[in-house]
Image (cartoon, rainbow over all chains, first blue to last red; front, side, top):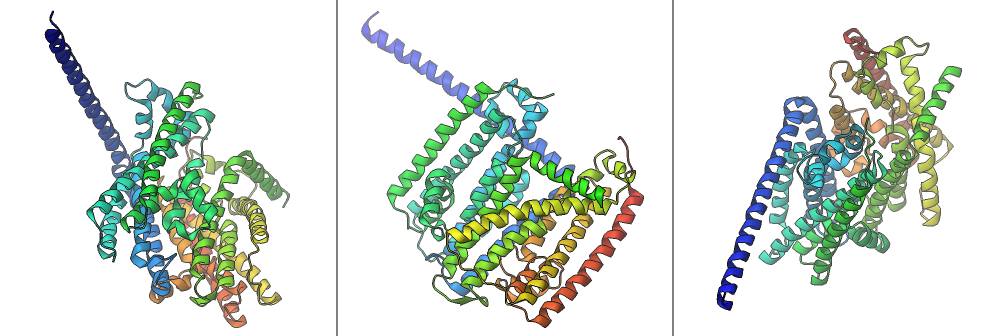
Length: 290
Length: 265
């Protein structure tokens, strides 16, 4: 075989292998989308069809909380004009970004709230035997469609707030805002995975998720209102500021490129660390269900 | 009395059994306090007076609201709805030599004191360490009126809690209703911010409900925002609300008992 033929053969071999990988990848994506949609449908039936009144109360509760804080910020900023140097619509941008990230992460990762029960009931054992990625299956077990119902008005109000900002919005800033929001979801995913892994490891009904939720609410307002030490903790220890304040600040053109790079770096490190922790916890898992 | 002391001891032992959960509840209250403290500190950096409050008064409001939230709004009555749906657990109470409401009021008090003591201690340390200046009550009579208003607030919330839980006689989906009521109630009670912040028409509407008598009015009395006459007037209206809610709860409870069906054991 000449060297040209050898090269040609290698090229075709690699191409075929790549095609196979791509086709497997496409198949996997489709499979996971189907599983996710199926689980979503099951929860939809559970939430909306079997207990409509319950769903109505929950959605109303979430909208009431949102409306009260919205009214509070408007009432406060109408009197004070600024909060930590931010105007009314700028402060509302922080608040709406908080809602966007918080509600979206609850929509996708709600299962972290029920992991203790899943362990006790033996559902995790059952999930481990299924032919899908265990982490994906656990985290998608409880897709909260109630949050989807509240997400629509939040996005609409966010759009209105952005339209009313006096700061000119460039396409670069807007793209960076979207990317930092995705980065926030990646960090939220990492925190939820870490909490799930901790529950797997300790095999207890965990309330750590509620501490995360309360820490998250600290970002309803710009983190600039807090002292330096709290700002440091909210940026580097539990990066709530990176999740909410950074996207809002980038849209307002008050975030330097160094902080933007650091935000993505924190996102990547959080993701990597949480996945490693998950694998570690899974190796230590032993069933406790009856 | 002895049997209710025993109920109290058991309730306290139950709380201590889940020590980690108990500590987390306290930590959650502190996080809200930190947010509100820094928010109002930032707001008052550039002004002396806002919404008829000065810096010391608003910080005192935030601290007192955090303490009273743990004392008034923390309740065990939300467990009643679950009991009504738990295959005969409620039925077993009807055979015991104790009053059902008294039993739950005892458990409720244990929950409240278990919440009050650590939060008061943490706030005390917080105030001392960071040298935070707070407003003192205007006089001994104001402290007495404040204590009476808090006592009435506890009873109002107790009966509201039972009233909401009675939905458990007819449906198993009570949690959503409890979630909605607690949210409306906390905001309308002034747990997050004084009602003076809200637009006047919304304030007017909220003040027509019993909710401001849970936190907002007791704190206003403590801060001397109300005159003696206004304070007594607020306590009288709160007492009227208490009787109205008590009668309504009794009526709905009676209807619920007639509809109750027990199975299992």
